Each structure stands twice: as C-alpha cells, then as structure tokens.
Image (cartoon, rainbow, N blue to C red):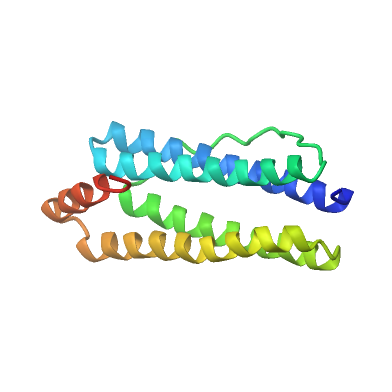
Length: 163
C-alpha cells in the first residue's frame, strides 16, 4: 500500500508528464505548419514517450493500491519564434521536469517508500538523456543559424527517430 503523501505527489507528476506530452504535440503541430515534417515527427515521438512516462506512474499507483486522480492540464503555447526557440523551450522544460523528478525522489526518501525510489531511479536516468537530447538539438540549431540547407538536413535527421 502506498502512503497518501506519495500518492498525491505521484498524481501531481502524472499531470506534469501528460502536460509534457500535450506540449510536445503542440510543438509537433507547429512544425507541421512550417513544413518541417522531420521536426514534427521527432516531437510526436517525444509526446508519445512522455505519455508512456505518465502511464508508468499510473501503473505504479495501481500496482500499489493507490488512487489515480487525473488533473486538468494547462493549455500549451501554440506560437513559437522558430525551431531554435522551440528547442530552447524543450530544454528549459526538461530541466524543470528533472527538478520535479528529483523533488519526487526526495519525497520517496522522506516517506521511506523504497518501491517509489526504485521507479524514480529509472526516471532520474531518463532525464539525463532527455536534457542531453534537447540541448544537443538546440546547440545544433544555434550553430546553423539561418542556413536553410542545414535546417533541412537536421529535419531529415530528426525524421529518422524511432525508425
């Protein structure tokens, strides 16, 4: 049985993971509207990954007799200044999520909830990868600046994610 404090904290994290999915879907749509299908594909895959993260938390609560309470999601932005702006926002968002995961882990330690700690080890490692990927793409976009041919090369590269 999971404690109430941990249950509430995980429900809050489910909301954040679902918002991440929602945000990345909005970004995917933005890329579709500016005719960068590779970027759109990358964001769509990322959105699905974030949804799967939420489901890991849902399953954890269900497995431990907790109650899942889905919360309202904020509306994500729909306007962006360009691909670099998007990935700078992704990087900042992933850094925020990392902080949330770390705080959740701290709660698990305080509550002596070892099953949650084990689950959260996976998320801590996952966030290292999430931040690294966002930072790398943002840095590449910053390096290429306004060079359209280079942007299209990055678009083709991102189209290969998950294939």
